[in-house]
Each structure stands twice: as structure tokens, then as C-alpha cells.
Length: 447
Image (tube, rainbow, N blue to C red; front, top):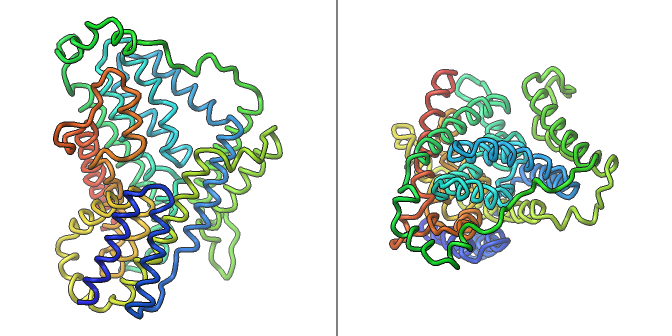
């Protein structure tokens, strides 16, 4: 009975924290851990310190890139691609935002691209909902394919402590060898679906009635949103190449463990490697460019990243306390069921992701639990895409931003809320990624 009450406390904290938004999600974990220790008498669990420190390092480097203007170089390149190929914007837009997320480790880069995607679509008589919804969803999907994202770093850290039955440990490169192709395949399916979704603008009576009003027509078509008129300076290019170079080095060291220094006969862990090179990248950008260090902490990337640190701290500590205390009972009840039906883990992960609105937080909360009750590491990796479930309800900031930037009204929340513009791209992308993840995991012997 106690465990049911404790799980109810966890769900209440997650639900209320998600509704309050921002840093509240992590802070509510503090209420949970106090209740567990002082009311239920549970020994406090262990917060994932390695994961939190890695988040800090990655966020610091990404925020320095944004503050230096290096991020603008990438965004302008993406805009050039879209404007040169407007006919294919419904497929190119999701790949563009996904790639930007892969490179930067955060889906927050999508905000700058959304008005540009809208402008390209509406000026070429393409239903804006098609690329807008696809771009928002794909930006979040790219998180699981980024070598410097919080979610991937967290997943690598947890799997490193969970050897498979044959003693093999799934490493950094193997994680990305599954998540990158499965993510890109999911994005491709989103783009193909989006190409045909909804009515063409000239056949949409609602849209036609809007533009019949000259005032609304002017608002819908408006002036061009662009970054193309911005002049780039040398420091921005230096910052971008430093950041991309650090990512390349991290990937290289992950692929060839022999290149890493060895201690006690073992190569230095990839968690420490990522931390070192992200801090190095941030410091080199600060030293070699004219970036004002005081602006780094004020950037959107830094703000969002620190919220993620608090969320992982509070949620993971609370969840670990409960599940560690009841691990024997959970193993006895769930192990055989989960082994027979590993898809059940993916469903739970998807639901938890919706509650916490974060892939990193969902992975931090559920991967240790899944491993503890006997879900094989290969399945944990194959179903990693299920950690993105916050498209189910249109409450995530990037989805709301897409609705606001689409002045045509085609990107929308439906009458029944659940029938919104992002639900189908999300379902298609995540389902495809999980399916491809399973296939690849079986082909590589991880399952």
C-alpha cells in the first residue's frame, strides 16, 4: 500500500510541476523527497551527479556559442537552404531543425527558424501547417541524435553502468549508431506525411475567407522574416568552428577508445570526456572571440539548460528514493512481464515524458528503473525515442510558438485539444524511430 501512495506523490509532483512550468518541475521533486524521507521513512536515493555535471558543461558551451553569435552562422545557412528550395520546404524544414538540434544539443534553436519557415511556405502558397508542425516536432526528435544533448549524455551514463548478459557495455558510439539513423528515418517519415497533409491553401475555405479581408491578408502575408540581411563577422565563424570541432573530437574519441588516456587499465569514460571538451570549447570561444562572458548566462540556451539541471536533480532524486526502496518487490512483480512485453517500458517512458515535458528528465527517471526491473539494455536503447512524448498535448513552448508564428491559422489546436497539428507528426516520428531502433538493435546483436 505504501508504494502506491509514494507513486501517487511522485505523479502529483510531476503533474503539478509540469503545469507550473520552468524550474518548478525540479523544485517539486524537493517536496517529494522530503515526504519520502520524513513521512515514509525511506533512505534518500542518489541524485545523478555525473549526468548533472555533464548537462552543466554542455549547456555552458552551447550558451557560449549562442552568446558569441556562432549560432547565427548555422541559422543563416539553414535559411539559405530553405529559400533556395521552397518547393520542398515540407521535407527540408524538419531535417533543417533536426540537424540544428543535433549540432547544438538543444531543440530551442527552432524558435529562430519558425518565422523563416512560415515566410518561405506562405510566400510560395504552401500550407504553413505542413512544414511548421513538422519542424517543431523534428527539432525535439533531434535531441536523441545529438552527441552533446542532455538526453543522450544521460542515456550513455546509465547504460555504462549496466552490462549486458554477455558482459558487453553499450557505449557512446553504439548509442549514436542506433539513435541517429532511427531519428533521421523518423524525420523523413514526418516530412513525407507533411507533404500531403491538409488542404492546399487555394482549396481551404477557412483560409480563403480569412484572406478575403484585406487587413487579414496583409497580416497573413506580411513582411519577410529573415536573417539574410545580417552581416557575419570573423568571430562568429571562429566560434562556430570551435564548437563543431569539439563535437567532432568527442565523436572521434568515442569511436576510438584507445585515443583516450587510460587509468587503471581502462580508457577515460566518455562522460568525463564530454565534460572536458565542452568546457574546453566554451573557454576557447571566450578567449579567441570578443564574446562578453556576462552575456552567456543571459542566453536562452543557458536558461533552459539550468532548468534542465534542476529538473533532473529533483525528479531523479525523488524517483530513485522510491524505486530503490521497493526494488525487490518491483523485480518480483514486473521482471517477467517486462521481459515478455518490453514494449510496456516504451509506453511508460512515453507517458512519463508527457508528464515532465523533457526527454532528459524522462530518461533520468525511467532508465534506471527499467534497468533495475530487468529491461535488457538493448531494448532501453532501441526504445529511446519514446522519451519524446510531450507532443501528445500542445503545451510545449516550441509547439505553442509554431502556432503563434503561423499567422495563416493552419497550425492549430483542434476543438477537442488532442486533435492538434503536432499529434500525427509526433506519433509517426516516434513510432518509426522506435521501430527502426528495434531493427538496428537486433541487427547489431544488442537484442
